[in-house]
Length: 187
Image 1 (tube, rainbow, N blue to C red):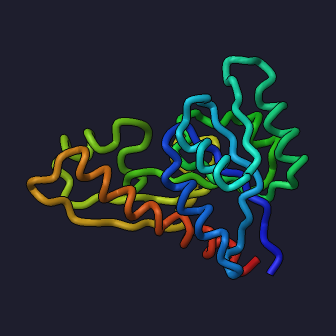
Image 2 (cartoon, rainbow, N blue to C red):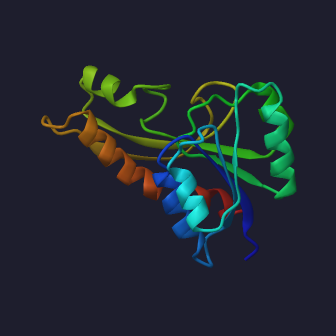
């Protein structure tokens, strides 16, 4: 199997990155993580890249030409897939059009419900009976791309934001890899 060169975009801890790195070591897993990009120089996820000898790029999104720098690195590493894993920045229309390949995102709700930020707080406030995560293709609409996979769980009356976050992340760690396998199964 020829693995697809993949770039993971992160902004924080990188728990999904960690699981993707572990899964990518399996010879049957369809991707090789060739690059990690972060918009946060203090992102703990960078440590996962360092520990696994994966090249990484820290970008300053306040600089005007940062997208060109990222696109140049994506070409350099022959990236076929970008996975947004807790990347807390909206991908611009210009970037989407310039990249022209697959970009997927993981979101901590059952889309189309609760797009955007503060998901767990909004889930509790609306008294949802269940929640979960969605892996979807990225398009110009915030959290609006075609769904690849969703995983869900029922909310207990005692669940607070922190508990829901932990339960959701546990599902995300499986869902992201399953979505990647699903994408490349027929390609």
